[in-house]
Amino acid sequence: MTGRVAAVSSNEVYSFSKPNRDSITLLTGLGVEGDVHAGETIRHQFRMTYEPDLPNLRQVHLMHEELFDELSRKGFQVSAGQLGENITTRAVDLLGLPTGTLLHLGEQAVLEVTGLRNPCSKINDFRKGLLAEVFAMDPESGEFTFKSGVMAVVRRGGVVRPNDSIRVEPPAPPHRPLERV
Image 1 (cartoon, rainbow, N blue to C red):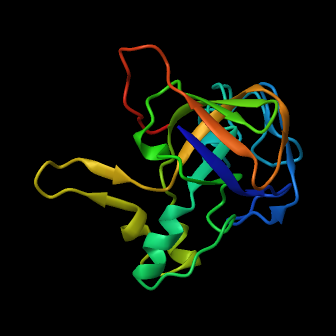
Image 2: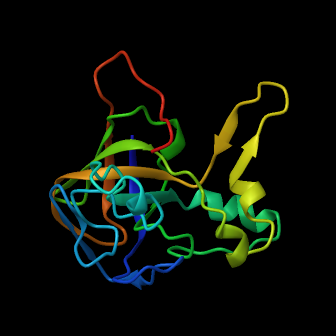
């Protein structure tokens, strides 16, 4: 499966949204150069207070641009970077990938998908009612649906730009479905 990078975003300070950039540099084992969430250990503002020494499985946040299309049909105008993602993708079924999938971005960079992003309640501060559109419970099965993208770690660094290709390399079977990280 091949997709493409629709946009790249980063922010050096804690903020809900991240400004779009012409490029970002991924650093092996750390994340996006200059991004507040880069580091070997947890950088998520809330989780750092009670799990500061855990490995950072959330170095890079990826979100599928198709979600913005879906949200637009429901009356929510959202664009790349506004939900805090570093890489916005097109034509990659991020939510359907198994844990451990490698994403080859552009000429050099490789990410390993670690799990689903658990949407933050701050999303309703950004757009009232948006949380219910990206996080829902199925009343029949009782299972949660997370639509707000996936998290990854950087296995090989490199520069990533909009329109770079994304090649998906699934891990060897048996596949494990994505869980929250």
